[in-house]
Image 1 (cartoon, rainbow, N blue to C red):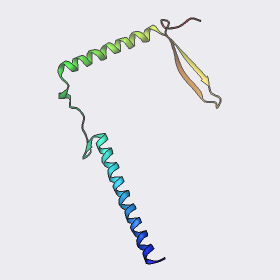
Image 2: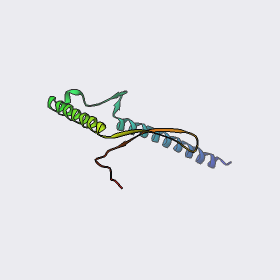
Image 3: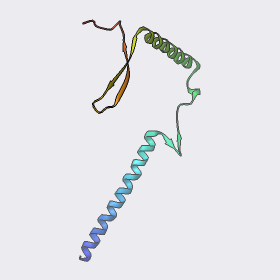
Image 4: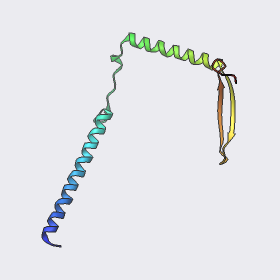
Length: 105
């Protein structure tokens, strides 16, 4: 191989190594930016940012949602079902029929 080809090949390899390093560095920076990390610390809104009124509102909404879930759970007919797949795997589930939205056919 001639000296000119060796120099060109060396330059190409050097450029590829520099580009690879740049891509790895940029990807790492983007991941850290996306996750919001700095020195291993994840920044999340501190509890002091949530006002007392907002906290009470969220608690009230959570309690209302839990009551709706409990009411719905009591209003449905639940039945344990089991089927066996073609490969022999036994599948268990729970069938819940809500009579209010059931369309009789």
